[in-house]
Every structure is written in structure tokens, then in C-alpha cells.
Image (cartoon, rainbow, N blue to C red; front, side):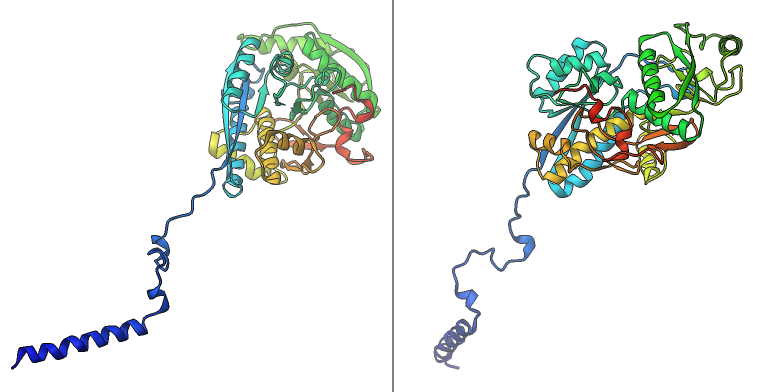
Length: 422
């Protein structure tokens, strides 16, 4: 075979085939486009996701020990903190879709000076909002401190009516109900039950007087009558002594005997000296309400209506205990921030504050009503639960107590009554 002849014929043939292949190839094969175009999706460079909008929240918690009469009601170490943390988790569930990320940084303090220092530290670390679980005087110090002009605070613990009245501050929102709101919620139910004659027992300490004053105002407001008021003079209790129950069993019947005819015993004992001891120990057999027996509160461990059962179960899964009152107030504060961020699609502090204080806020708080903020004193409108330690007996406002705007404003100081001037 003539090899040279064969190769002379093969080479032109191959050239023809290659030329035809070029002619038949797709137009894209002729272009000078980057190599990634037309490549599998997995091989393409990924688009960078935008950085999440950070919303940082500070939490200042008064850590001085608080002792209750009931061992089962002793506050856990994370009282309030656990509620705030669960709300952060709730916010971040939505935040994964809206581009927000929420964080909580807690400081525990025992003095006003430590509280002020903690607020400064938290804000230096980027906290836009401060949850304050502190006494009323410390709360005002946080609000009025030099250099705190841009500070915004959520009051999650102090119930004093003056904080919503003559001592109100524009940079504080109150998620905890006031004494007036709690008293009004209780009074509405007692009047609805047609128990208008009250035998009032008041403790001897200043905080007891504030609670007593709110109860007396509520009685006047809703048509109840205080047939007599007695002051319990003890400023300490025998709850931790071996014979404590014997002393109480002997003292309280004598303390309550010879009272005028009454339908219910109402107790004002914020200091935890005697209130829980009153049920079943009065001279005359009567129901007890206030600081013992039927108690008004913003949240109860036994609350389960309006989806609260699912919320309670999630809280137990996270914390191995039930959700308490302070947990509820802290949870609500963080959820308000989250709701504002979601609705405004923003993390700007001024934008969030404006939304929270405006008419469009409507936080679903598992209490049968969407919650909003009163424009005249920054108090969050909310129903009051009436609980006896085993169940939620009722929820106020009660049927028949009407208001021209919202029945929730039958609880606490209404706009025409307020002394607040921002």
C-alpha cells in the first residue's frame, strides 16, 4: 500500500468533516461569551445574600432576692429573661424571611448605679432598646440620666400609676399593667358577680398603700363599697418558722372578726407579708381577692385560651417550667419590637418607635385582643387575667363595661383622667 497516497486523501477528508462540524455547530459555540454561560447552575458563582438587619436589645434585671409566701411561686433565676429569650426566637423565625436578626444581652444589677452603668454598656454595644425589670425609682433614673436623650425603655416590672401619670416619660413604654388596670379588672368582675361590698385588708408598707389606693379608686369607679378597711401591722412574717402556720391560723381569724357585713375580702399586700394566708382563715367565710385568692395579672401559668396553650407548651419545652407574669411582660416587649420591624421592613430605631406608638400596631399576644399603645401615657392596652392559682377564672374587661373607643380603655386611667404630660 502506498502510505503517502492514503494520507493525502485522509487529511483533506478530515478537514472537510471539521469544517462541516463548525457549520452545523450551535451559534453559541461560535461566541466569545464567558465560560460560565450555559454551564450547570451549581457551577455558577452564587449571588451574595444581603447582610441581615441587626436589631439588638438590652435587658437590665434587678437581681436582689425576692421572697414570696408561697414556695411554689418563688421566682426562678431566669424569671423574665426566659420570656424575653423566647420572644427573640419568635422574632428570628420571621426574621429569616424578612432579613432581620434579633439579639438579647442581659445585665443583672443590684444598685441604681449598676443599672445606669449597664445601660451605658449595652448601648455602647449597639442595643437600640432597653428592657427594664427594675424598681420605679431606678426606671426613672435610667430615663433621665445625663446622655440618655436617645434611650428608649420598655418597663416590664414597675406597676406604679405615677409612672403613667405625673411622672410619665415619653421614652418609656409600659408592657406591665399598672395597679389601676389590675384593680379595675378585678373590680369589674366582682361587681359583675354582684359582690359590691368589700372588706379591705391593707399591708403596712408603702407598696401596699399604692395597691390599696388603686383598689379604692376602682371600687368608687365601678360602684362597689368598701365597708371597712383594716391595716395589717406586721412588717415581717413567720412563714419560715416551724410554728408559722399555727401563728397565722390564730392571728387572721381574730384580725378579721367583727367586720361589717361584706361579700368579699379584698387584700392589698404587695410586700408578701400576709396576703396568701387570708383565704380559708377569715372569721366569716367569704371569698378572697386581690393579693390572695383571686388575683389579677397580665399572665398566668394556667392561661390556655386564644392559642396560649401552644405558647405555654413551647415555653415549657425551652425552659422546663411554666411562663410567669414577668416572662409575659418581657416577651410582649420583644415581640412589639419584632412586629414593628416586620411591618416597617426596617431596623431604624426611630422608625420602629414611631410604628409601636402609632395606630397600626397590633400585637397578637394570646389574650383575645390585638394590643396597642395608649398615646397619652405609653401604656400597652391589654386584658387582665383573673387567676386563682389553678385556673383562669375570668378575663377583664367584663361584659357590659363599655367605652366609646375600646373596652380595653375601661382598665386604668383613660385619656380624660390622665395627669401625664410628655
